[in-house]
Image (cartoon, rainbow, N blue to C red; front, side, top):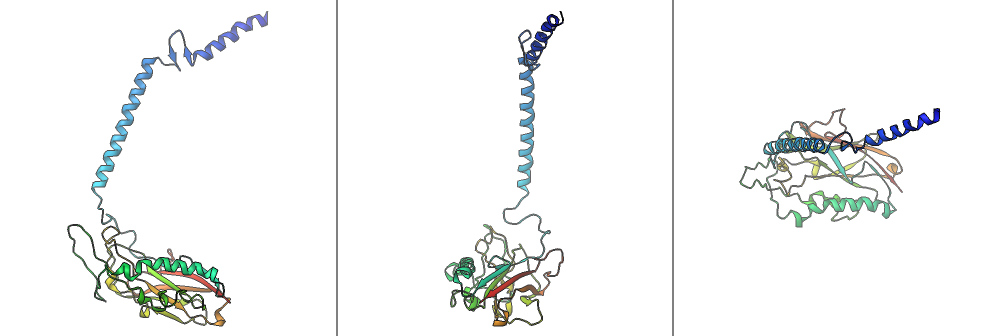
Length: 279
């Protein structure tokens, strides 16, 4: 008797489970009729179209406030960082192995392509020691001051295609990050020191590591399309006593109001790299 009574109950449970997906008596699918589904889908279609319209409107209004040439807010990065080339903070090589130091040489040569005379001939010879201020014109395009690759002398890659790496006296190039409108006060220059008791002799190109004011201000990537940052080359005159030792070199922007001692940012106005030349 117990098993006979269970059979109708099981059929009822199976029927109830199927009816939750589709009920043939009422025509409901997942508990809703066709008209109910049509209304709710229409509601969500209108709702999301409204949200998309609001988003498009706010983006359009925001874009109206932006300038294609000058960022609206520029107070977050008031001082430039300092970076080196080749693009590494650890320069390690054997001066008798051209395969290894060849990677550094290739990187420097590629980087300096924009400083070739053929690329700089369209730029202007500016007056040294003076900011190159330019008034706004109709197309907003600005002229760039010419930076001669030859001013890097022994580190230009013109007279010595290995930038001194083959003789164990390597060159590194330093530049400041671009900041629109930056006009450093004073007479900025690069100064490098080796963190040890005995100093290492260095040659700077241009002379004394000067960064001329004529390359400031910068007007932005779009307006200042041909602009190139001024470079300072440092040739490390290493001796036999310096080989096979890891040397820590710190370079700073000195002689101006640019910050170079912020402990929260190790690259603000300075950069530290390590170099080890083996023989």
